[in-house]
Length: 326
Image 1 (cartoon, rainbow, N blue to C red):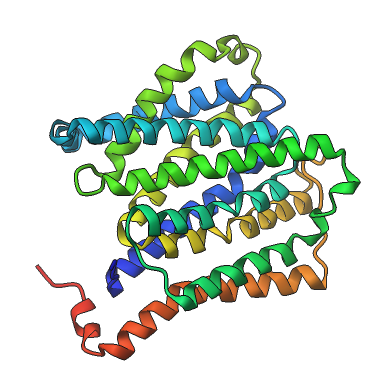
Image 2 (image 1 turned 90 degrees about the vertical axis):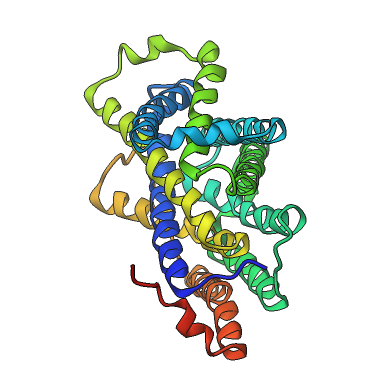
């Protein structure tokens, strides 16, 4: 069973929080990018910037030698991990052609459930009965919070369901990437896994990218593209390292609050009058507010109840949890 001490909990919490903030801003930037570049070419650019940063970081630290220790089976797993990641990047951007950032993040929230179930089936992790109840509450809370967006009759059904299909494909791809990556932690650092993903991504995507799209880009367009690229590096690096410190179930629960951050950043953009033709206001009524409370309580339950149960059963563990001085 995956146990987490106090120091690991704090590190994991900081890292996953950084990832959630980045992912909350990303759909807005991706929506804006759709006016000047296609999803495939943008993904190629994001991978290019990420590759340069990851390559120099890993070479300078001498960490690239870890690849020499991989078996043939592990190379296959790593390659599959890269393909899942590429599919996740591209499909989510395509989804934003059909639905807004907030509803897209709502539909993406099946990913934490895919991730938690995958952790049980593939990584032999354990989810307690209380945690399962928290996951159910998380789903109910999300449905309540986003209930104004569940009336598909107000939009063209064909288009909205195409967007939902793209998001679900993206969610399953993301879960596959996360699970396969975690299975390699005993041999390969998260940073090296991402380095390999960026290399494969450039090779696979390059033949389909439209490099002429970069020529007419204005200064503001470049700001958005560069933001998307650095968001990629920061978010996925933080998430990958967090997976090393936290059990899959706890990580997946925290990911569940990403839509709330997305709606919060959207509200800030609307309030400041930024991109009014692309980003519109989201109305939060009493039902949505109650859903937000349920989501926060559910996420807190998944994080805190396992630690409370362990400390109650083994009070002396608190002493062991303190980081040792060197």
